[in-house]
Amino acid sequence: MKKFIYVAYDLSLDKIRRRLVKYLENYGHRVQYSVFCLRVTERELAELKRDITEITAPDRDKSVIFIPGESAHITEVVPENLEIIGKLKTYRTESCVI
Image (cartoon, rainbow, N blue to C red; front, top):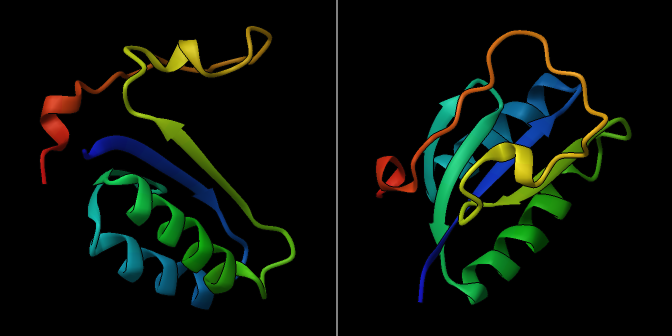
């Protein structure tokens, strides 16, 4: 059974970032500059994590976060003490159908 996940990243190396974007475009679509919405099985998620680890290995300052898409609001998965500037957008998982 497929489930939705969001992948957010912050990479310092342009070459690695371009490679990761091309890879993620095969699984889903971009909802923000550094955030993708994907629909994957458990097996695909395991492969995705393995591949992303390999792709981003050369970037020592990397940050990649996997957020379960089943969460109705992003505030359910971020710490309460997180400061947010601007409006917090939420996306319905129906808008992420691949």
